[in-house]
Length: 264
Image 1: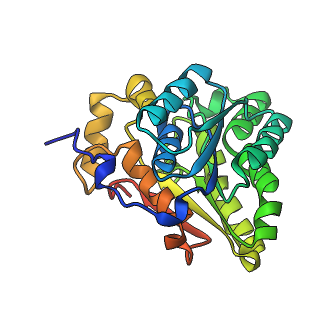
Image 2: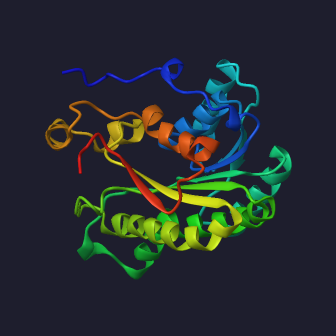
C-alpha cells in the first residue's frame, strides 16, 4: 500500500479566471492554509494571508517565490482572535491586491480536550479560534464583493462532528457551526452573485497532524474507513477550493463538499 501517493502541481488543472484574482486566506502559514496560498499563487492569483506564525509564513512565501510565481504572497501577522487586527489586515489587502474576490476561511486550532474539563473561558477560546473570525472576515470582504457582483467565499469545515469524534468537543462543535454560516449567508449574498461553500477535510496529512496527532493505530483506523487506502494531502485537498474560487465553480453555492477519501 502506497501511503505517500499524491500528485505534483504539474498534474493539476490551471484556471485562467484565477490569474490576477485577489485572494485572502486565513491561517495560511502552514498546513491546508499554506497549500491554498501556494496553489493560488501558482495559478497567478494575487494572494494575501493572515496568521500568527511568522516563521512558517516566511517559509510559505519562500516556496512560492522559489516556484517563480507572478505575485509573491502578502503576509499579515495577525492573531485572528483579534477581530480589529483581522479587519485592518483585510482592509489593507483590499488595497494591496486591487480588491479581494476570493476569501478562504481556514484558520483553526484542533487542540485536544475533554468535555468534563471545559470551562466557560476555554469554550469561548474554542469558538473564537475556530468559528467567530469566519463571520467577521466575511463581514469585512462582502461589501466590495456585493458592489462588484462577484465573489467566492470558501469556508473550511471539518468532518469531525459528522464522524462523532469526541476528543475535542469545543473544536467539533465550532466546526459544525461553519456549515451554519455557509447555509445562512449563501442565501443572503446569492442575489449579488457572491457564492459561499464549505469544503470539509477528513484526516489530511499536514505537518501538524503528522507531528502531533498521527499514530499507527489512528492511521490504520482511518484507512480502514476510507474508500481510498492512502493518505490525503493538503495540495490535493485544496484543488476543490481552487475550483470553487474559479469561474468553473460559478454555479455552486450553499453546498458542503467532503474531501476525505470516501471515509464518511
